Image (cartoon, rainbow, N blue to C red; front, side, top):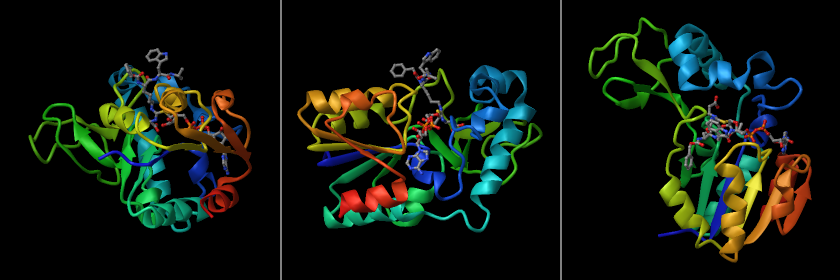
Length: 229
Ligand code: BV8
């Protein structure tokens, strides 16, 4: 069953929850170049550095005060009001949508709180600290555990389901994403071509603003509740 409303979210929806975005001046990528921490090659070259980058983000996500904000809560309300006829496709690897009460959430770039084994491909809840000495609890291999996230050059998760939903939705909204990363940045064109009404909610115009029928600029924690009504 495809949903009437498809919402794509990016780092901007979690910014007011205290999670840094990627491309802001104080963003996550400021300390590291993406290719140094978010590619399979980076992990092969320096697994310790990559583990430290994700262990720090996992620890931050678990700290007090990092909570879903009014934007996450409004989307959970939207799903209630539309009787589940809403799909959230998130580029984010945090769990704030789930903690806000959303149930139809597809993490196309994986989940920080999960880990996977490069040897047996098992996926399970991540330990707070992953290291190169870690032993896979499923196949007992050593040094094969990695964050269950999609790095640059890796295939995003759930694309078939996402494109199916984009081709059948009536409304496509993108919230808090800069439109830098593909294939997510191209979703608006698929939805618009299928006749959906498209709306972008962002702090500032994104790289793909021109593709949206409606643009609502401002912080997500105030714009999204206003849009949901
Ligand atoms: C793919 C997980 C093949 C990890 C991420 C060369 C080699 C290989 C691939 C490529 C290549 N050249 C291009 C590509 C494709 C590549 C790509 O797009 N690269 C870019 C950089 C050019 N894509 C890939 O590699 C993808 N895989 O292509 O596979 C394929 C695919 C399909 C079909 C056939 C083949 C995989 C990409 C996934 C990478 N993993 N994350 C991790 O989190 O560490 S990407 C990471 O950055 C995020 O997940 C997110 O998706 C992405 C973009 O970030 P945003 O969410 O948009 O955040 P950003 O900071 O950029 O923007 C925040 C926005 O919010 C801003 O606009 C800001 O104004 C706004 N904002 C801020 N505060 C607020 C706000 N808005 C509202 N309220 C606020 N308060």
